[in-house]
Image 1 (cartoon, rainbow, N blue to C red):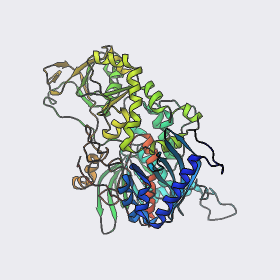
Image 2 (cartoon, rainbow, N blue to C red; image 1 turned 180 degrees about the horizontal axis):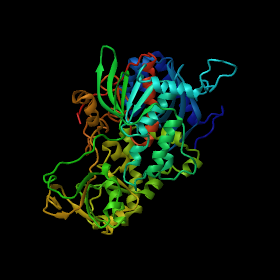
Image 3 (cartoon, rainbow, N blue to C red; image 1 turned 30 degrees about the vertical axis):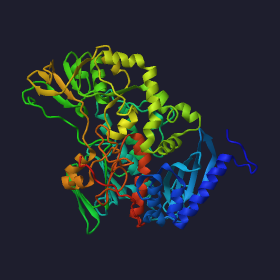
Length: 607
């Protein structure tokens, strides 16, 4: 336990103070060698915008030196740090929360010192840009909302909104166009609105939330409510732990209205070309039958975690007499009672669809093509998420913001070490569950390094199922299991590579989605998409996540090789958290702040 010294400061606090004093002096002097000497040989500085105008994790003293020497870091001096609360010490590691100011903005940090008083992990995040604070900031004024006094030319709040909706995109152009109006586009739109950046969100569905409403009826979030809040407006305290799709849809529609977003529903982006001379995009959209050309400076693709549905093409599709659907097109189980259904795939959507089909009395077969990681929902909540995102965590003072920051403080390079114990525990407590699945013939995995669900999600965005009951149907044989690759369809059968023939009235391709830049390519062109390269993944050199190591999510929330083109999305947690850092980068460019980018994302893979 940390002892208190005579000054009233704990020993942990004294060590943190000493480190911060030296680090601040080194930064302000531009002394890269001195700054680097304060980091351990194995160390990680993760910066979200504040010192790099990028999302970057540098590793080891040499890379710290490069960062401190870079134009972006020199631009923000002078810098000052202060400790928030009292640092803590456990197992030879001293931890402290920090607040800091630079010439450009204000931010939050987190520091872990090892036993030698060297930095092991260091997180710096930009919270706001000076002079451009959000209205909710203590450093800015809340909007007044009305005009006191008599004014014959009064324009009400509603009239201002009506005029904005009528003019934006027609008589004046937005600064930003966001293609995609799901949770990612809506969260980013809300951030940009609060920063005073005129934005149009383009969405092919009619209303916010329709992308959820149109999915199969049993769909619900597998993440708990504490993990899923949107910026500014958290879910009500009586909101279900796991949100049904239609409640999410209604919430997104309400949220877009309350946050006063310029949301163009029933609008399809047809093409987008960048004019380097003007620094503008020409985005041609079909808005409910009207062709409109938008000319924003910044273009953002907000496509969730995925792009185009991955629909394999196999011989015999033209002769198959039943229905063929991708999981994104599956309407639900009601029309298939008593029908023979073959679901190709063994991840989240496949299990959800198989479970709901079995419930209505369909004869269901799941075809597993490769191994799948399965974690029971209750086990995941208890051992992997409970300390950060749960009612108990909130009672212990860990609200969603605090949880987000704790999670962000763990560099991706070593995150698997923090994740693995939870999944080791899962294999222990759910040993009988896993045994029964394997005895049924199901191929299980826990990721290439046994680090489980979240690392699989970050690395490849696929290959897992959070079990809410359907895995039991497979283990019990109620949902039949076949394994192999599909070689052809006949008039009434699915044929596998081992010769197995599965009779089918319906085939569902639960085969996931392609990289986000595949869908973007249809709009910006394949050459621009290839210039940007693969979107998503860490470069971990594990299955479906080819190297080299990136250190951050590839091409997400940060500058890309195509000027003024951005990608945003992920699950609700990522849409909420990273929307701030993307919005701040866009705000800086909108107001003309120089943004020298440290370590612009390289392109290593085209898809």
